[in-house]
Length: 246
Ligand code: FPP
Image (cartoon, rainbow, N blue to C red; front, top):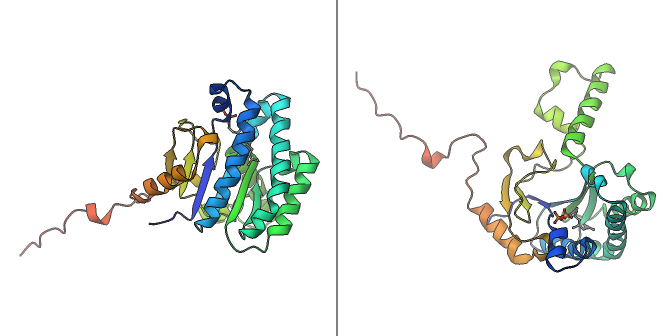
């Protein structure tokens, strides 16, 4: 079975999962965080190279303050506790997004976890935190403009590879497979540039119910796709034209 190099997950449905069980939304996030760490471990065990989790979007600040605080405290609690598991599984930890706007104690833990795990050679785990695809593209454009002003590059040098190198996520390959739970079928400002040729897998389950069998179903489904990147499938191409005798 072919394993995608990079799986990115939009973990959605914590609130609805909790509501179905007549609990408050917090209950869903608490369960969702546990599921996130078990999926991280499963992905490392199958030797996935890159896993990116959309953990907090630039739009999530619109939620009630108490919910935002809970999400931040879940980040703090779990990441501190799971550092050993990251080491045991040879995982290096990274972030994308404007993390400098997160609470200072979260920022400290994120840099500490990066430092502690940076020499691990297995899976690269990236948390997208205070991340928005549009913001990432705007930031890259500003940086590129600055480079033009400083005379480092010329406007005529701009191409896809150069633009990509200005993105904060340029250390990651484009995601091969994007999974979204809770049966919502949209990107929600995630990896807008990078998803141009990603395969999508929409899972009906809410995130707190997502498990190894769902991960395997997503990978199976990926294996049945024919990725043509705008080209044609050689098996489907026209037969060679008959030779015309003169
Ligand atoms: C979507 O559920 C989930 C999020 C806002 C972010 C994901 C957060 C977690 C899984 C918990 C913390 C994660 C880590 C890695 C520590 P929702 O609230 O949008 O659900 P709803 O659409 O049903 O309301």
